[in-house]
Each structure stands twice: as C-alpha cells, then as structure tokens.
Image 1: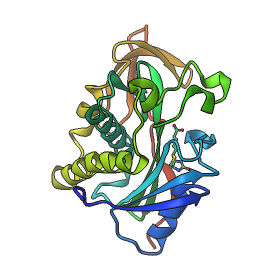
Image 2 (image 1 turned 90 degrees about the vertical axis):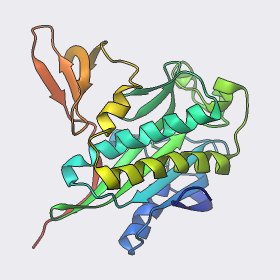
Image 3 (image 1 turned 135 degrees about the vertical axis):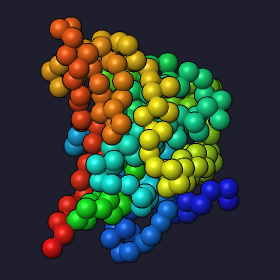
Image 4 (image 1 turned 30 degrees about the vertical axis):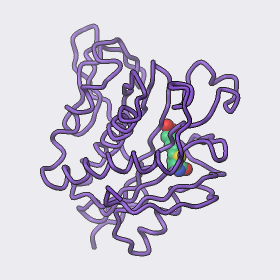
Length: 249
Ligand code: BTN
C-alpha cells in the first residue's frame, strides 16, 4: 500500500458518509476511507441525492482529523477536489478542471462531486468526512436523460474501464500526500493549488443572486466576485456541512 489511508470496502451501504461518521463517533482516529460497491441512499450537496449505478462508480468517504481550525474546514473540500483531479491526471484523463466549490469537470462536464462534512467540538475541528462520488465506469444510459449534457465518466472520457478499488487507491494516494502537507505546513497553499485548475477564472458567474467576474479564491475558500459596479463580494457557500456542533462547556 502506498498510502497511509486505510481502505474498507463494503458490498453495499446506504451512504458511506454515515459509516464514516459512525466510525469517527466510535473513536476511530483515521485516516480511513470507506467505499461501497453499491450505495443505495447517496447524499449530494445541499440536501440533494446522489445517483450512483451499482458497481460502476466510486462512492467513498474519507475520515480525516486534520490539524485545522473550524473556519478552515471549507478548504478540505477544495483539497479533496484537487486530489481527485490529480488522480484523474495520473489515470490519463484529459482536460480535468474544477468548478467552485467542489466539482470536478472534464471538458466542462461533471465527473465527480464532493460532500465535505465537519464535526466541530469547542474551538476545534474534531474530524471531517469527505464524501467523494466519482463517475468511473458509467455510460450516459446510467444517468437520467436530463443529466446527459452535463455528466461524464472516466470510461466516457478515455474509452477505458478502471477497476473501482484501483480508482480508490489512486485517489487515496493523492489525498494522503495533500493531507500530510496540510498537517506539516497548514492550508495556505490550498486556494492557490485549487485556482490553477479553475475552469471559470475570469468568467462572469452568478451565485447567490449576485453576478460578477470570478476573481479569486479567498484564504478560507470563499469565491471572490467583482461586480459590474466594481464591488468585491465574497461568497461562502463552499462551507463544509456541519455534523453536529458541540460547544465547549
Ligand atoms: C455533490 O453533490 O456533488 C456531492 C456528491 C457526493 C457523493 C458522495 S458518494 C460517497 C459519499 N456518500 C454519500 O452519500 N455522498 C458522498
């Protein structure tokens, strides 16, 4: 094994997020990742569901306990998208780019989505669960017709299948290296790394009802837009979703 993140493979799970969270709450220190060959109740961002045809795509949740402050948690989602992009590069997938906050695109179509969830205890980030859904061996017919123009997979992009366990290992290798770097030197490098792969830098975007030119990523992962009247606006919706916040007594 060339990564320090232990991998546990389930034949079937409702959501790998819940298994990883239960492990964390039972005291597992990690780093550990849980993948399910069949995920029956996958969750996406903002309360959406995540469709993953059985045996075809990667559904994985990594439990990490990075040495970061709670306000830095959004950077973990950015970090995970960089790890996915690097693993896809290594697999020979062309034209990989990122969409803020956490989507991975190939030729402008979504190949992976990331659901970061964070547990905060007092002033500390207790743990994070990084859910990654990566379309690996799916064909367009595996997705509902309304998604056909906006999704892709490793198979569609390269013409080749990828063993799901190999895909998980490739991804965990990249994530391990970035996790080690964060623990050694903090997360100041993350926005810069992420921006180098940004699909929309300099483009006009609309977010939370605001329109502006995509100018940059803030030090805590926010999206910085420059509006037509010259205002600099920060959008924070890239935050990790809370697992349960306990305040210090
Ligand atoms: C998104 O909405 O783009 C994020 C999708 C995240 C899906 C993954 S699949 C593995 C993990 N388990 C879940 O229930 N969700 C995440």
